[in-house]
Amino acid sequence: MQYALLDGERREAVSGALGTCPTCGASMVAKCGPRIIHHWEHRGRRNCDPWWENETEWHRGWKNLFPESCREIAHTAPDGEIHRADIKTPTGIYIEVQHSSITDAERTSREGFYQNLVWVIDGRPFRQNFDIYHMLPDPTSRLAQDLVWVKAARSMAGTSSGTFFRVSANQKYYPGVTKATLRGGLIEGLDRIKPEVEASYRGHHQYHWASPRKTWLDAACPVYIDFGDEWLVRLEVYDETGLRCVRLVAKRKFVHDAISEMRAEDIATRFYPLA
Ligand SMILES: [Zn+2]
Image 1 (cartoon, rainbow, N blue to C red):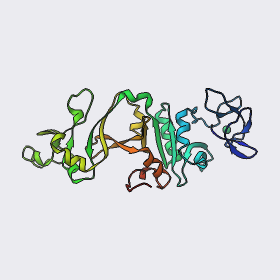
Image 2: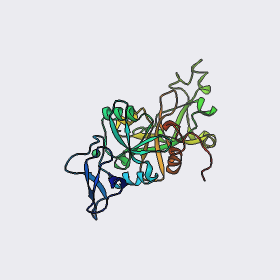
Image 3: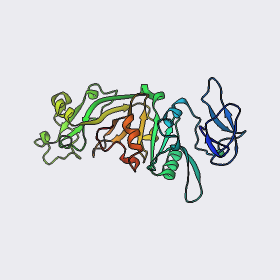
Image 4: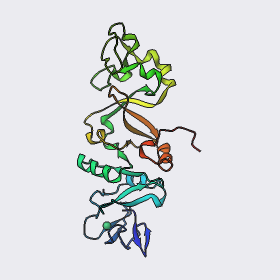
């Protein structure tokens, strides 16, 4: 943990110090060495929060993007259950930064417990399994209403550059067909409509995730993947065809919105210039 109580105040670990866990009151030992991130550990026993994950530089980097008063904040449920969120923003959004895989059961418990929660997943361990393909138009645009995209995949050459069926163009072959029912017909390539797609682009792309960590695809709370650069990759369902997509969100925008929006799902939904 980054913080323990020392003389009643939250403090970071300093060599040789003994503190108290702000959650359970047990004594804590400062762990400070040249090759480890300085942190606190419960003395001689496991962390009082079974959801707690050993901190890495990556965790610490994420916590440090937020004010000190937002980090490692305990939340108590009405039934008395208590856990410590990695980050709780001043507007009440909980952010869990997760490096290792977790089970569906643990994901569901944590979503139920925090409710107004957003996940940030460390994507670096599976970067090689994750391809990001062609851009998609804003799903709310008029253009998008007329297009049914072919799911892009590593194994299907050509799909990664964008192929689609146009509902209007296929009416003569399938009278009465709608976006929800059209699954074939005259096929077209993204190249033909690229300027229109670019004009309504809002960060959406097709992707392929080989050997996915499936629990994140089923998550009820928003999931953002951090591949270690300035963009986060949000997992989304694109449209009523059920096509999954990703949306690129600047990390700066995410942090800004997490401390200004009230609800986790409103992060990166409103766009205006950032100071
Ligand atoms: Zn404790």
